[in-house]
Structure formats: C-alpha cells, structure tokens
Length: 521
Figure 1 (tube, rainbow, N blue to C red):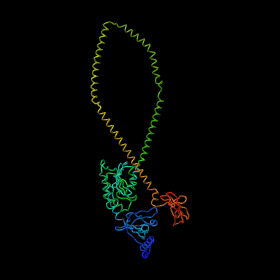
Figure 2: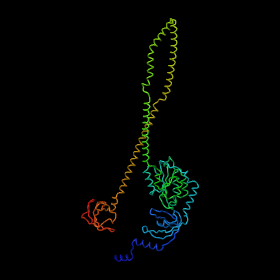
Figure 3: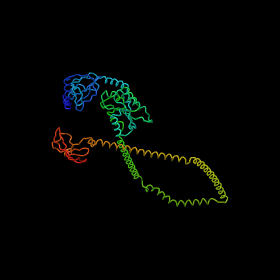
C-alpha cells in the first residue's frame, strides 16, 4: 500500500521553483508584451548610480512597480518626479527573485500632476502666503541644550540612531514621545506631541525640553503624507520650543520641513545639529586656556623688559645725590661761621637788656598762667576723648556677639557637607556609566565573534595555508582542507572542485576531545 500511494502521488508532473517562475514570466510577457498604463508616480528612486530608475504607478485602488533602464532614461524628454501623473508604455514582466510583477517602461509621457501633489502644492502656497515659511520667524537652535525631546516611533531604528549619535557627541537627557509615523493617525499624534512638549514647564516633574526633533525614516509620498497635514504644520510653526525636522531622506520634503526652525537631511544629521561635540569643546577650552597662559606670560615678559629699559634710563643714586651732597657740604662749611656770628649777636642783645627780679617774676607768672591754661585744656580734651571712646566701645560691643560667627560657621559646614555628597554621587554615576559601557562592549564583542556562528552548527573552511575558502571555484580536487568547528578542528580533502564540491568524512576511530585533529577523506 505504501508503494501504491507513492506511485499515485508521483503521477503529477514535478516542477522546480525556477521552472514555475520562468513559465509565469513567459506567460506574462507573451500576454502583455506592449501595454500603456496611466498612473501617478509614487516612491520615485532614481536615477541610481547605475543610471536606472525605480518607482511605482498607482491609482486610487492599486499600484504596480515600474523600472526605467539607463538607456531609456537617456531618451526621456522630461525628468520623472514624485506625484506626477504619467502615461507609461512598455511591457509587463516578472521578477522571480521576489515573486512579483513589474512594468519595464520604454516610453514615458506626462499626464498632469497627481491629486496628492496638487493638494500638497495648494497647502504649501497657502501657508507660504501666511508667512509660515519666512526665515525671519524661525529661531536659532540652542548651542548646548540640557534636555532634547524626540517625537518618533519608539520601535524603529530612527530613535536608536538619534540616541546613539547624541551619546557619542554630548550625552544629555533625551525625552521620547512615542507616535505612529505612518497611517491616518500620524498627524494627530505628532501634533499632540508637539503641543504636549510645549505644555511642560521648566520646573515641573518632567522638565520642558530646550529643543525638539521630529524624525522619521524615508518613504514614498503616501508614507510621508501625515507630515503634510496643515494642522501639524501650524502646530510646529506655533511651537515656543525650536524644532528640527528630520522626516524622510534628503530628497524628501514635507510641510513640516518648511515650517520647522531647521531641517536635517537624516535623523542622524538632526542629532549632529542638536548638540556639539563635547570632546571638541573640551579641546577648544584647553586650547584657549593654553593661549591665555601663553599671552599672559608674553605680556609679563614685555612688561618686565619695559621695566628693565626704564631702569636703565633712570640716573644712578650717586647722580641723584651729587647736588644735595654738594649743598650739604657747603652748608656745613658755613655752619661754623654762622654759629659764631649768631652767638655774637645774641651776646650783644643780651648785654643791651637789663634783667631784674621783677622782670623775671612777670615772665614766670605769665608762663605759669599759660601752663595752667594749657593743662586745663588738655584735661578737658582727655576726658572728652575718654567719653567718646567709651560710647563708641559700647556701640560696637552690642554688635560683637558669638552667635553670628557660630551661625556662619554652621552654614559653611552644611555647604561643605553638601558638596561632599554631590562629589560622591557624581563619582558613583560616572562609575555606573563606565560599567554599563564596558558591559555593552562585552556583549557586542560576543555578538560579533564568529564563535557564536560556529556554535549554531556552521563550520569555517580553510585551505592548507590557513586562508578562508569562500567559493567552491577556489577548490581543486585533492586539495587539503582545514575545518574549524565550535568544539575543535578537523582535516579534510576535497574529492572534486568547481560548482559541486563533495566532502566525505572518514571516521578516525573513537571521538576526539575538542581541539584534537581528525581526518576527513
């Protein structure tokens, strides 16, 4: 019964996948060898470096992939653009590699702008007339933001690229507002995110960002249509926080790009615009510090040289004292003669005066009176000074108490304790960051190691010289080979070369420990 069942199942003709794909290709090309298709260009990509262009033709219910080869592109009288409605002439064919069909265009004629592009141009003209695209209303980006808000999908590669780029350049706080970046709700969710970030406060539980990034990967006009919403464009224009638009690739333009304060060609470029490179800033500061030190040193050297030059221009002490010394010597020589003349004059005047007891008594009484008056004045002045000093001392003593000194000492002690705690917390955070970076690097090394691939059942083939063999064409019959497995190495010999190599393993007896050499024939 088993053999009968096998024969009944084998009655149908068996085809390979390639044969089925070839038959479908011939059927489609024979039935649709020459067709004319009217549709709107969507997802235009080209011309590539090869000179070919790829896009899709669509209407309101279906779409078909299209390709224009390099030779046809050179003959076209106009350049295809996104959203343009065209009439394409060509032939239908299939692409077996992806099991889909496409039209190979031989001629392309414009048929008018597409509905989406017409709507987009009408919105663009209206917003531009209102001045939302003017460069004068756009704000400058903060040089060193402390918090950056990112509006994008939390599961795509865009957010990972932005966070990775910011971490490499200048690590800071990144707030992610998750939204859908494709579909009917895209415009509503992104508008709510922009308004939500603007509703935050500087001193709230979640701090308001200094900069916003609206990001999405590339796509067709339909994929990016949510970012052409008029309400979203007005919300971006009204945002108090500067916004960088990173929607699509460099060739993709949306209304958000026109109203944003800055447009980035890619999400990674937006991260580079948002923050500077911390290492470059540190290098710049170090360079400026070195230049300041050098300038200060040169300035002091110039001043020192100026002082030395001025000192050389000043006269010596001997020169300065020469004239006074001469005058002093001349005065000394005249002093003896002057004293003699003065004594003679005093003697002559004394001889002319007659000294009597009454004269001496009058002079003594007058001197005593003047002395008593001066003593009374001195006593009164002394007591006045004492009273003033006592009053000043009493006023100052009221302010000199130990309590203010104790309060100031306690305040300084609290400040020192706070700084000590902040230092310990900063060191702990830095150690955590370094530990996390080391763990991530270790995981990355383990992931990229070829040992993990070998552990899943693969083997590495090398020739006798240890060179890795990548293609069968590199083998020759009888060539000695080295096979590296996850648990060790083995030797083998190629029985044939070319497109169909055959390797037969010959057991060498009992199983060998990992790392021992075996023989395969």
